[in-house]
Image 1 (cartoon, rainbow, N blue to C red):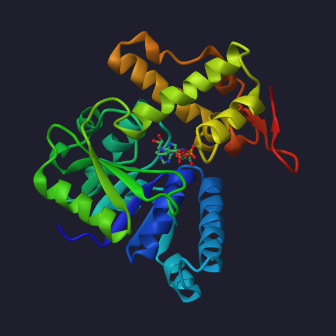
Image 2 (image 1 turned 90 degrees about the vertical axis):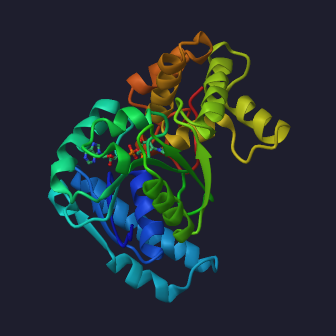
Length: 291
Ligand SMILES: NC(=O)c1ccc[n+]([C@@H]2O[C@H](COP(=O)([O-])OP(=O)(O)OC[C@H]3O[C@@H](n4cnc5c(N)ncnc54)[C@H](O)[C@@H]3O)[C@@H](O)[C@H]2O)c1
C-alpha cells in the first residue's frame, strides 16, 4: 500500500495538527471541514506553529513554505476522491462520525484506507459504518500533535494486516512512535487519563479543593506538567465528557460516571480553551480560575 495523498476530515485542534505533521513529512494533504472559519483558523495555526518550531530549531525555515503549499483546504468530501488515506478528526460524536463514513465511502477509491482519530469510540463499530472494515484503523494522535510523540494504533476486528502495516509506516514517516492498543473503550491513554481528570472534577465538585489548589497539587505533588483541570480545558470539556460517557456505557461500571459538574460546564458551552472559558477563563491576559 503506497500512501502519498492524505485527506483529513475536521480542521479543529487535532485536524490541523495532523495536517501539520503530514505536510512536513512530505505528504500531499487535503483538509476538509464543514465550517469555513475552522479551515481559516487551522491554516493560520499551522503556519504559526511551524514558525514556532523553526524558532526552536526543530525544523528549518526553508521547510515551511513547501509544507504549507502541500496543504489544500476544502469544504466538500468530493475532494477526497484521489486520496490514498483519509484520516477522520471531526467532533467526538458517534453519529457525526458515522454520517461522515457513510458519505465518504462512495466518494473514494476501493483501496483507499480510512483511519479515525477518535479518542474513545469503538473502531470496530465505526468501521462497520464504512464499506471497507478491512481497510479501516484507529490512528489516535495526541494533542498537540506536532509536539507529542505517541500515536496509538488500534485495529478493529476486521482490520487486515496490510492496513495495520501501512498505519505503522505512516506513524514512522511522521516521526512518531506507535503503541498498539486493543479495541476497548478509550484504548490505553484515555482509559487511564480521563478517569483521573473526571476525579479531579469530582474533587472540585465536592469542595475538596478549588481549581488552583487541585492543579497545583497535581503539578507539584505528582510532578505532572499540567494540572488535571488545565489539561481538561486544553483537551476540550466536550471531548472529556464524551470519552467518560463512552467508558461509562462501554464498560458498564459506575466508577466511570461523568461528574455532574463536567456536564454542567459543557451544557454552559464552557468547553475550555477553544471557547475562551472552562475551568479557567482565558479571555483576559492570564487564565483566571472560574471556581
Ligand atoms: N482534543 C484532544 O485533546 C484530542 C486528542 C486526541 C484525539 N482527539 C479526537 O480528535 C477528534 C477531533 O477533536 P478536536 O479536539 O480536534 O475537536 P474540535 O472541536 O477542535 O474540532 C472538530 C472539528 O470537526 C469539524 N466537524 C464537525 N462535523 C464535521 C463534519 N461532518 N465534516 C467535517 N468536519 C466536521 C468541526 O467544524 C470542527 O472544526 C475527536 O474525535 C477527538 O476525540 C482529541
